[in-house]
Image (cartoon, rainbow over all chains, first blue to last red; front, top):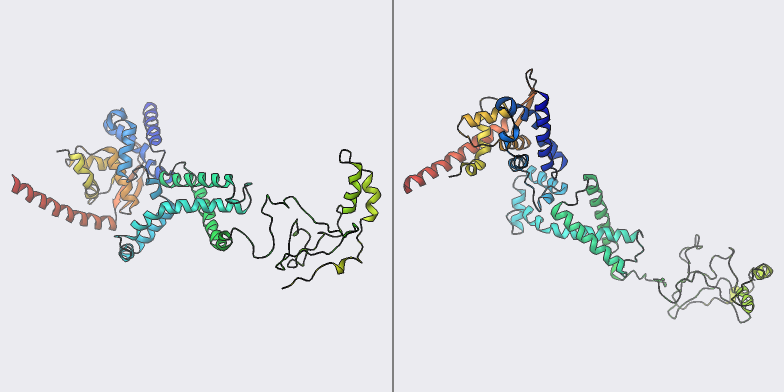
Length: 316
Length: 107
């Protein structure tokens, strides 16, 4: 084989390979692996140039693709999806099951029916992934009460359908597997949380801040009596005897998680006392003098004598 | 009548048939088909068909080193390939007989 022949083979081979670039790497490599040797044989037997013997590389590639049963076109990428391939292998292993299962539901083959369900899966996997994204707070959207949430969902569905229908954009196989795994986890998450989702995430007990309410931004509550003295271990109840929980009540609950929040929260840790706020007010908001707080800090420790008498016993 | 259209349906059978008695490499198989009278068979079609039949488990391959040129990959019929050849052969004979009869009546 002369150098010129080798270059010609390389050139022709590369153009055929380029025309098959959309095939899955595995199938393409298998199809191409013996081609250089084959081209060398053609030149040795018939003489060059290859284009005269075999036609344009693109035509050659198209013929190769068709003969090898790797016809590409819209939707064909989906037929090569790992789950479809796995199912087809399963069906091939159990002859007749496909038809029998299909007859049961009024289709010639069960695969024919499952094929119809694929667009539903494309949408479901997009929803599942987006729900998971919300669940782990990756985006600053609070589920579907936010335009960002709807936008994200819309984009995810469009991309998912497009990948399913056309295989474009192509993703490495492991990304596909990982995406499917995430989607399945998301679906399980959806099923597990279906009751909570249907109720709009309203827990059965307590008052959760969902954002935008009048207590939005409140992190703690400092009850005071008529003399302005702070009350400790105060629990707030509504008219039905359900504890009212505002602020970051989960922060300092410690081991007694199930007990209703006791205000002020996080007793014993440093926090501003209400008297301090009162004292600061006369000085004017324009110049909050830092000298005020150190002088008043000794009054901050709460007097335990007040606390037990205050908390009302809820009527259950 | 365009024989390339006809060929598409029976190329598998033709390739299996020329491998029945003797193993062959890609170009060799192409040559056998052409010398048998299938002049219009395309290089890429034969090569693609070989790959597909191999994938389907009807052919086995082995490489034979060559001193004069590139190493050659030989294709050989296995049991599944022979079964397929016999089955497809029967289908073809039945089909051809039907067509013969049809044409005989018409002309």
